[in-house]
Length: 122
Ligand SMILES: [Zn+2]
Image 1 (cartoon, rainbow, N blue to C red):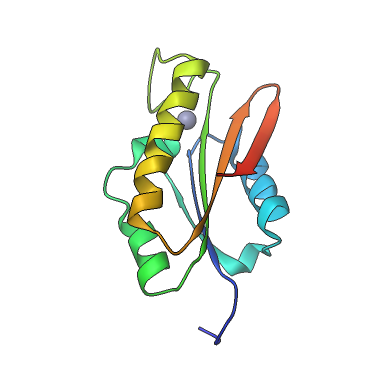
Image 2: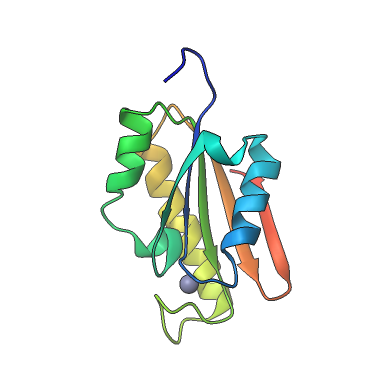
């Protein structure tokens, strides 16, 4: 890793409908280029990943300090029968946990639905 280089990490759902949009929003919020961050994608997105092994690697070994946490509504395969509103709540709860786990990072919430993708620093 280059000294002082800004690097990031993004967790997102594996759902093909939303990956690209989540990545574009993360890039827009952080100013990072695609090769400047790691990703972890799995069903359920941020709330669906319990161990955060990849995030630990990116933060601990890689020095990632811009961390994006994504999830989506409109039927997430990781959480069948959970509503869009409940997914947003799950994402917020998961981010609170990650903020404690990675205190030196800036954190970004990214949430997608069929209507669009929104994001903000949190
Ligand atoms: Zn999903």
